[in-house]
Length: 284
Image (cartoon, rainbow, N blue to C red):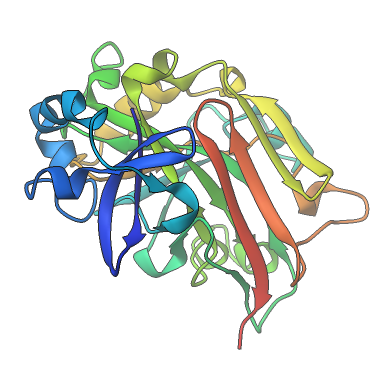
């Protein structure tokens, strides 16, 4: 099922999406709430609502203002250098363990919201990524069991301020500027996508300019191995999100470098999930 969390008629709700129309699941059941958290922890709830969707009133997608799928995600853990060609274009050796970093809540915003180029830099870059939404928590999860812990998948643009990313060996500063990490708008449940969301075309673009184009099958650490690796050191909880790294074609590795500019709209699209589109603005 394709799900959308967004504001309609003055309140945030959860919608089931079919083409250009959506059903407000929060109106069908008060147990759903205003984001995906209740559905993550109660899979039977979503199943019980499925039969009621066809006969319910519909809302036009364009009338819904997207919000974050989980209002306050517990952890957002990101993989770096998960595509071999991206590691190579950045001059990195092939990693034997994934580069991992975390994003804070203020760095995230929904699809449609402005991506903010900060006052302190003009080197705002784009990164098209698959994002995993954890449904069932756990620790020391095996690769064989890992996909049972996935609720669904969404689109992520890991906007990166490159000069700050490289001020230290740790990437935290460049990955945590406010309003640089775009999420959504849709979350597609795992049962509606190929196993591990592998084999999906992933692309970023500005207008007709294609910046990145690759396939999720090219990830060195697929979703099950990423979950197993992370759960070795951290307990995963429902609502945690994992960004799976970006393919080659990022702006800093181009000649000349190609950074995002105010007035542009950066789009990230993943086959079967949707398009995350955000206008770029300067920080006020």
